Image 1: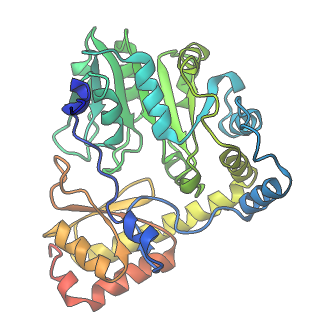
Image 2 (image 1 turned 90 degrees about the horizontal axis):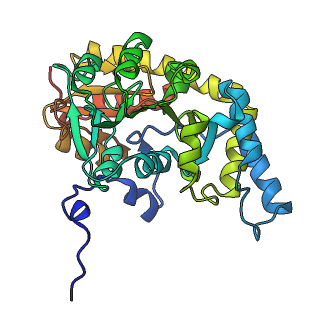
Length: 365
């Protein structure tokens, strides 16, 4: 007898992660990994020092601190928000999952500012929510006006990335205020995974609006993607509800220690961000000089337009360079996303492109 999943799961279109990851973990080969917006350098040396100290003297036999007290104190100082407004999770993806499970019932309306990071959709649709994708005429223009027009009494959640992944689209405070003021019966989620690069945040609005949640990550600028750690900034009332279902062992001890150490060495992160910005400017100008259509984001990635993204990416993979095909996303046909690391990585990418005639032919000139 075959056991069927519930209807919402059976009808769910799964999220597709970067397909090349299996290559990295199955073969001992050196790849230039520019497909998932991680850092291209290791985390701060202080992270390794703190982890080693724990592995030598800590308690692997104990459960992690359920309140993540030390890490949350570090986040409070870094974000300039109260400790009671902060909760940590096993990556910001896990935070988004908990938010949906806390506030969404079957047939609730959920709006997603599109195109955007697709994983949130999974969490909402798996609960039977009615998900609506809200687009502007151009994927690179703000769709705040369209979102405001679509808000109804049934709108339970709105999800938006600021800056957006993969378009780089951003929203200004006036637009966010317009959404919050109309959203009477729901919660606005602003995904600030790329805050360290963009320096754009709506955190100060938390003092005025109790229906705002901001999610952030240690997987991007801080270089801790493998350890999975993220956090929420939200009102005490919202966090109180989320904490009712949160797994108190959600973030393991090593991740807590590593994230706290990364926040002890913010200068290391800031230096890397400066390197990325320099590299992004150089890479964007280089592509433009080759006649390639480029959209540079305020984050650590750019989009380029190519003739055939799957073949283009396949050819680069043969040269041990991994990029992300975004052409299957509505409004982003022909676009490839490139994670921007420090300058030597960008120069290596361009050198490969210029030396390979087959790859160069796939550009739109």
